[in-house]
Image 1 (cartoon, rainbow, N blue to C red):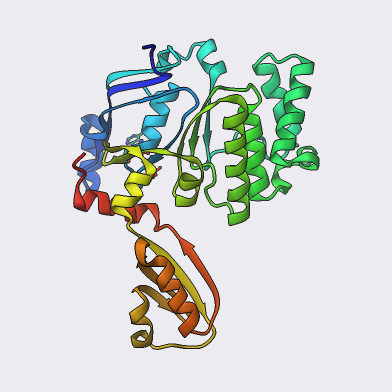
Image 2 (image 1 turned 90 degrees about the vertical axis):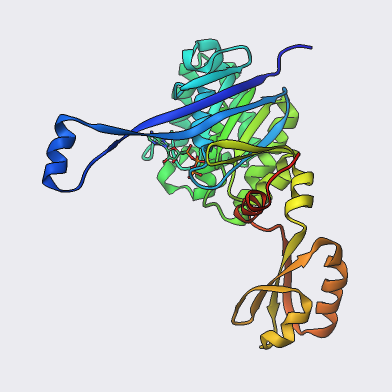
Length: 329
Ligand SMILES: Nc1ncnc2c1ncn2[C@@H]1O[C@H](COP(=O)(O)OP(=O)(O)OP(=O)(O)O)[C@@H](O)[C@H]1O
């Protein structure tokens, strides 16, 4: 058996954080003699990822996802354990390693605000030493996949958030990396733009056999792209396995959102499922998966409704359940 493409073994990161005591005395003492507290952001996590996999990396705010991605890309030095990506030690930041990977952070941008994206892309092409024909060919291909045609010649500040994110992805993928680390690539985008980005990532994975590790707060991103998920909680890895198993065990219900044509009292609505929230004419129910079809049939038959939507419960809700119930496998 060969090595996995990505190997992470007992990887840890502890950040020293200076503590300041309150008041002027504290400030002076802080100045002369700092005291540090250790924050264990990532605690001895281990996992392996094979070439071509798309893996979801889930965890609540502050769980340690970004820190892990930074160790995988060599931006942060691990405090303990080992990590290799494609046979390279990320923190050495060797040119060959950097040519093979990319890191996209939804909340940070690399494109220059006042310039057309095309100008920034030319800079990237020069940094990665692409020939003119390689640049043209990749630009053409990615522009078409991302439906960005006439947008690249406009100053970035004039693009919508979704268009900007797509241009960021184009910039991050111009050197055709084989391993993509994506931190919240759909953050803040509207549903339609989220869908476009997802569709693009799926196509990129299939066309180039690229490996993707991605974090997202949107369950829809994960269900659309990932068969496998890693779940991190307070720095520790608490689940590594199929998404379906996780959903079956910890999200045995779905969320049904109904726009009612008239007002109903909660007593009238209760028989249809556990009421999560009522706001005006909108009600959200939690319904067991196996009761879903019969429940929806009853809602449609009994109530006057304008619209009905079925979604997976939010990621935070699932993580909460996993943690409360505990994983035994
Ligand atoms: N440079 C740093 N110095 C000190 N502490 C840090 C630093 N970066 C992160 N931390 C702490 O480490 C922990 C993990 O943070 P991290 O950003 O990895 O979490 P995350 O899972 O990515 O969260 P989010 O979803 O909010 O981005 C947090 O408690 C955070 O405050």
